[in-house]
Image 1 (spheres, rainbow, N blue to C red):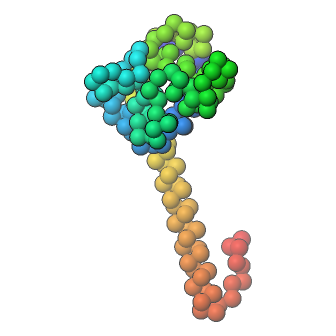
Image 2 (cartoon, rainbow, N blue to C red):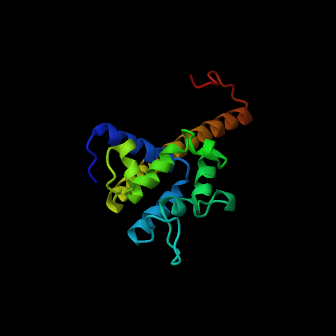
Image 3 (cartoon, rainbow, N blue to C red):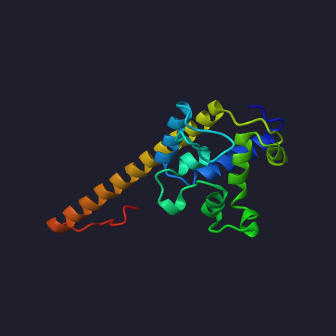
Length: 171
């Protein structure tokens, strides 16, 4: 995919990250697998073979009211409602234009400077990057929790032993 202007590429990446940020990591992993297996389609939300568009596949496994199966459910997912006013809300625009660039809709030009469809390969690269970032973040969070728990256990053991803590804040 060639985007003629770096500013448009930055906007596309910002939009994709915004949209992906609404879904748990397991849904991103599922989308990546479906893209690799040819289970992601263009120009319609679902087909009779069980395949779906990017946002339909991303929303699978979510509670029934949060699954994206058509335009009204897409708008509701990102805005909480479905009306002309909701479709104009800023929080809906990244998803709206992600659908347009995935489908190669000419309206994508106004936001990204191109209507060349987002390729499966580029989508997989982006998913890989976001998944790696999330895994690294989850690992950092796990390490912080582990260290905090170890500190609490040490403090608790000192209190039980009757040892007075001279620096209880660890500062």
